[in-house]
Amino acid sequence: MTPVTVRVPAKVNLQLSVGPRRDDGYHDLVTVYHAVSLFDEVTVQSADKTSVRVTGQDAASVPAGRANLAARAARALAARLNRRRKSGVQIEIRKRIPMAAGLAGGSADAAATLVACNDLWDAGLTPAELREVAAGLGSDVPFALLGGTAVGQGRGERLTAALAAGSYHWVLAFAAGGLSTPEVYAACDRLRAARGSGHEAALSTELMAALRSGDPAAVGPLLSNDLQPAAISLRPDLRRALAAGPEFGALGAIVSGSGPTCAFLAANAGHARELAVSLTGSGVCRGAVRVRGPAAGAAVIAAEPE
Ligand code: ATP
Image 1 (tube, rainbow, N blue to C red):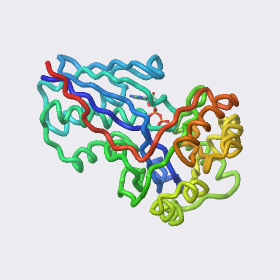
Image 2 (tube, rainbow, N blue to C red):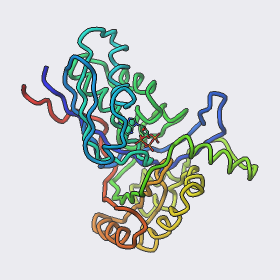
Image 3 (cartoon, rainbow, N blue to C red):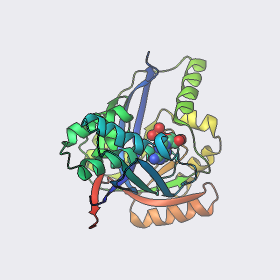
Image 4 (cartoon, rainbow, N blue to C red):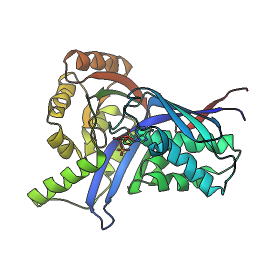
């Protein structure tokens, strides 16, 4: 069968409102996801046994084999299809999304694998059916299928496309090393318990209105992330990076998801270029890239001829 390649975007959270910890250990969330043009590529082809090969960014640290979310996605789709025979796939991941960076790279690879295997096996699952399988794999996986800008509720998996106008120029500033998402949530719980604070998760109607206007100057000051204090408590150096953005004219500066990547909103493409150079030059990050949002969700880019 012909190999299938899928391109899938990273995400940032324009708002991440975290409610109290639930009995099942998860937190109720309301989040505004935004897919950006930093892509992983995943190629699948039929094989006797399922295997995963990772190249590119952080390749040496990304788990290979069964622990990789992409392999779990292929198995979950085969189970959903009751596909017992010929369900082995060789999965090749070309990573550009750093690992454990708050950009949902693992979730992206899982989403890409679902789309790729659905195509490879000619399974014909609809986008809604794929999103159901995706929700069983992780909170951020359904959004990586959908892309664009969307509101996520529950653990983040219940999605509604957002009415957002315009396109946005961002700079992503990468930190050395990653942060574990469960550890950041645990730190958030500790900080809240110590302060006796906490609240129900709620959508910012001001942010949604700003997104409808398509004006980055309106969106910038409304970016918010309840996990940011927790991420900073684990990585105090993030404070310097976040402060540097506005010094170089960023319209907004925020930790992406559970961090440690910081996302800076620029006024336009030219400003994003200057911002990336200034942030890298100032030494507050290990590197910075310019990206645009919203980007499309996971999609087949090539079915190579045999
Ligand atoms: P989250 O989606 O939980 O916010 P994140 O975006 O910060 O996480 P990911 O890059 O998704 O980080 O990695 C989270 C963990 O998932 C890693 O520590 C890694 O061990 C595991 N993992 C499994 N498969 C993959 C994959 N294909 N790419 C990256 N990480 C993976």
